[in-house]
Length: 264
Image (cartoon, rainbow, N blue to C red; front, side, top):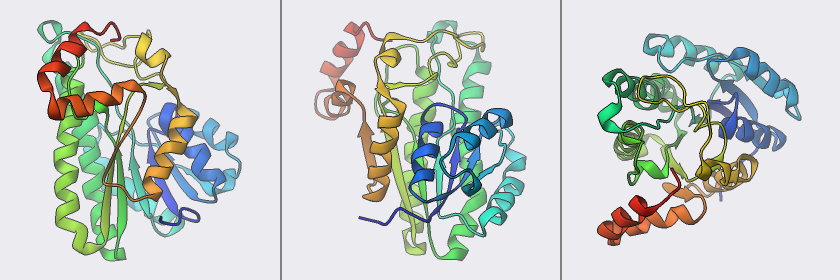
């Protein structure tokens, strides 16, 4: 198992939810952190709540602004002199039927959940190669492995991340670069409230699955253990994780199970 203290770790989407919970856990374990999201005020509040706030640097970041990524990476590298791990956690979800969803919503989901993550990854990749290694930890979703109603664009973007990062791992293993893909199930965060609906506005209400999901702090500890074990891919959640195996071996059964599910 890899040592996981005194690392420099960059966490995106750190102002709430999984990213916020990861920040607290990683900070108290003796790591130095760069935390990012669009909301700098919330990031500063997260920093203050950390056990060792002096080991946390706030760096605002908008995944939709691809052109700013090289500059943001330079700032991150200068903060502590290096970055050991980039945790690609930021993103948005969706709750709307395909027939109703405006095309602009699909563009937004791809720009944030896929292209923004790729832009940031590509910007930091040359630094990892120059430094002789680094790790990308990308938070996707169980929806990156199988589909569910009302999440068509979200599923598409998360599936795309798996394709990209599997290839990145293959191409840059020789450079000491590793990739871990983490697929959450239901986690108790604001992901459903912030999800885009058909017209591109926020849903503003949670859903039963998210409400009953795993607490974010519990998820964060499980995820950190996955990173320590240097796993290629991991699925963290409740009974919804069985969908991974149904998809692989019994796809028709999975289709029926998801259709009958009342949890959306």
